[in-house]
Image (cartoon, rainbow, N blue to C red; front, side, top):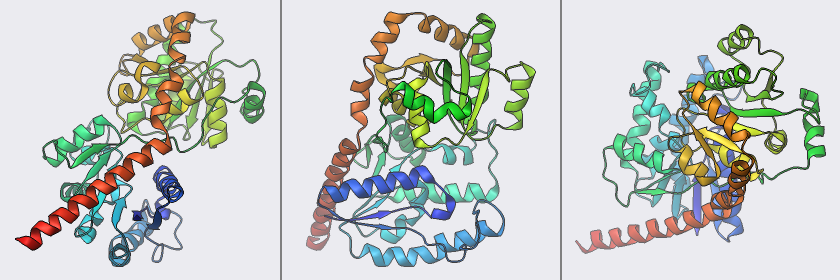
Length: 389
């Protein structure tokens, strides 16, 4: 099969989306397919480090929206199926409309923000709103959309105002790194530079400063744990972006400086070490498209506490324990009680590997290949009917 993957503009630094496309390309090739990746090239924006603001942003738009469609239309002539790997590129759908194609939708949060559904958390400028409307328009006209979770699929159905029919599929993401439990001595060697030693016990959160990651909520949960158990030796490791001013103020206000370890942009190997050593992952997100840290932690056989709402319940399955992300004191109680229940911990972590097995790259690619064939077949039938008519 000749498969054209549409990837992301590298200057935008959407690393998770780039990783998704590269893993998909590699595995599809291993399955004996011909695969090419087509993505915008930095020409106008070549000399700008950032495309998120200023002149670099507007020159990046020229690369993505003026030059790339010309390249994409030429590349499309080669392919049997075209796969736009990131829904934020759905504005390219009109350029490939006559070819069998699909879009993978990872979440609808930016579109929902632009529509004002999260106005209390995030303000979107005029340009951002126009861009998200453009993306939504592309999704509405796409032949097929694969959502990474049932929650994302339901958002798609609602916001595209289209019925739940054969246009939508759910294909869960596959782990794009072979996360597994690392021996303690190796994990400590990787993390001791951050002050995480052989005897350090800690809770872990992994995520950026986006409002829906609920990092302040994590600190509030931890504060209540410490209030309940002042002599508790558990520290809190916050792995992700540099703390915001708000987070720093919270740590200072409640005198948590000696207990909270801020770990900025860990490598994948360091993440695996953190998951392997942690007492538990706390992932109380308010909203997600998928929720990578849940299965990453489970792959390292870590105990996971996450939000009692979709898609976290969908991804965590019976191998996770659930808390209300907006009730920090109650969440702290559940965490403390659970950590003191060895039978519950053992029963839950025993389910980790079974749950993680549903999220392999091999399984994901197998489902995409089946979907590709279905879309191509429908396109052939449609063309035959058009010719006959």
